[in-house]
Length: 288
Ligand SMILES: Cc1cc2nc3c(=O)[nH]c(=O)nc-3n(C[C@H](O)[C@H](O)[C@H](O)COP(=O)(O)OP(=O)(O)OC[C@H]3O[C@@H](n4cnc5c(N)ncnc54)[C@H](O)[C@@H]3O)c2cc1C
Image 1 (cartoon, helix red, strand yellow):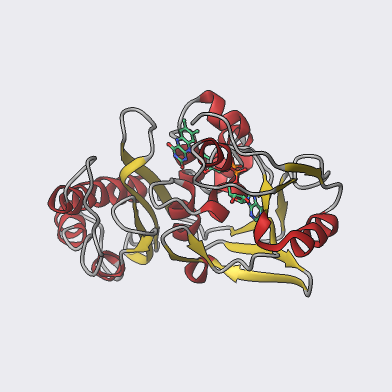
Image 2 (image 1 turned 180 degrees about the vertical axis):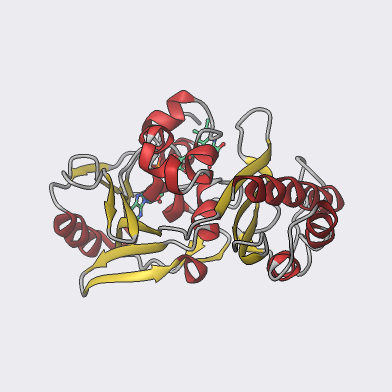
């Protein structure tokens, strides 16, 4: 089936109007951002919303700006703008680096950061990167604005902490201290480029080259992007030489409920998580 079921189209002109429409139509309504996850599911009739609320005509939701110790990215900012942002390249190499690996140019020209994290596909790239960067997700609903830490946001398969009548408006990335490096790599599905397994890492070193903080996230291998706490624990307080990184990375799948499907068995994904964690942490350390 390549044609979606019939729906009413509502071009919202403000976030408040979008929230009011979400409240009015309840379960029947869906927000539309870049449409690159929603429209395929509608065409397959896995989703049949009766009302589409388009965020694309709301001004002021697409931006990348420095705000004191934070870089704020508007929810409707497209991948292509993230990929090209000098501010993001300077502070968070893995964000433009990861986004550049998403799908193809058409997907990156339309897909938005807010849509990606709201959708929370377990094989998507952005959710794991947002988690590794310990970003804050700003959402507006009928009761006002709230900020959700990335660590509390991704809850389960396609499930986030977002309420049905909330709209993500901004993602806030805390600027890292000096001597911080980051990297992202994935084993990509050859057709879609979604991550069969991906790893995002951020490490900070002190003046002597000792790791003071580490944030390592595995994506694609499980139902949601997951912090690799055992890898992080194996890095902090140590000099990041090859043996230390390899030893820490060998714990990449610890505690992870690794999935198995036609793209990779449980064992293969667990092994790839280890391989990618080793490479990504090494690259992040080189950049620190
Ligand atoms: C061929 C193809 C290849 C792809 N390859 C990859 C890949 O390699 N890696 C990858 O990560 N992704 C990939 N994607 C998915 C792509 O990244 C999507 O664009 C993204 O997942 C969704 O963003 P969107 O702006 O298109 O959101 P939409 O599809 O418009 O919306 C997705 C969901 O989020 C909700 N939503 C949207 N915006 C908001 C908001 N501001 N607040 C609250 N809810 C909101 C919508 O209601 C909907 O439920 C691919 C897609 C295609 C079609």
